[in-house]
Image (spheres, rainbow, N blue to C red):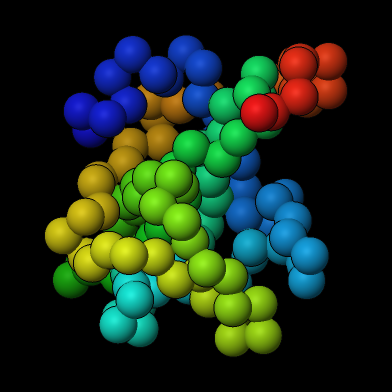
Length: 122
């Protein structure tokens, strides 16, 4: 996971059912490519509390023996299709990086305080 090197101290994992958009939460949404290929179910996000920004989507894909989790950068201009429960991005399955949840702490009450009192996101 080369993209997370050096960022694990500032990123926090937040479950998809705690991240809201205008039509609800991201729980049950699929991350899809621009060609409508399902890349995986959105299970959470990596957020940076101090800047109040989502940095990565965490998706789960079915494997041969077990499900695996992957990361996709959130700065890819995603398009939300709330009625279809999809988030479409300009990517394909090769753009996903394996994710080890043990490398990132879960979002805490302290992180919520940081987000509330930090300078507004630019």
